[in-house]
Image 1 (cartoon, one colour):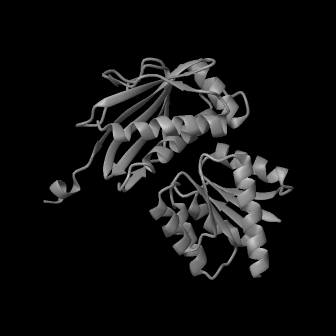
Image 2: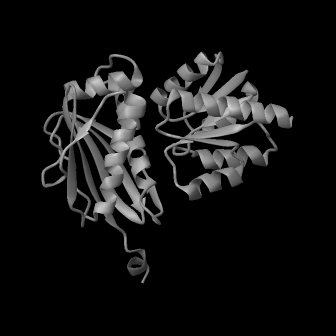
Image 3: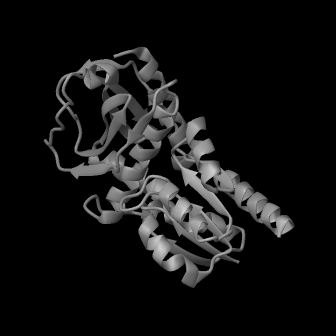
Length: 158
Length: 124
């Protein structure tokens, strides 16, 4: 995957966490990931258009509770609709902010989905390599896993 | 001052409501998609609409086009993750009066609300 598509996610995670969650986040070196996701709770968003694939924001439950609590202002059970709504909005903002920096690309994002449960897996879209961005906050770690590729629309139309 | 918030995320509606409350605006109605908003907006008769773009059932840009087609002139601020210049231009052409990109600070949203209300009051 082109690095042009990774840097926007790094900037977007920093921006969303500093602006709306008010937690300092440190991003570590991106790496190729095979088995996804690593943690208990995942917020997933799809991309379509000139770039296709998925973005998964994955947290251990205790970290997700802190992050969602800081964002939405409350203590939510991880199985509650309000928890899923808040986590979905976080992955929505990160993906939206990132795709705005895909220069010259017309990309749409889907409505987010949230999966809760340890051991769940998310299938990587066909033809994509997944790049995982490990992130650290004061209460633990989480990751953002990006599996996207450019869509060759001319070839598809031919 | 009556303000209508249209966003499919309850969390985001609550964040916007909190910001509006700090400005003294507590007469707020909410909808979770454009279709629901369109069916209730005239009954609420708002002075300002805060509108998300990406929503299920009916998105924000479709809401704007249909609402403006009815001749309604209530100011609309699009509050969205859609940050590309082409999207902003599309929204303004459709009849949006101002634009806030998520993520935003409470100060940024407050500024746009005040600015939009002042601009529209002057134009009236």
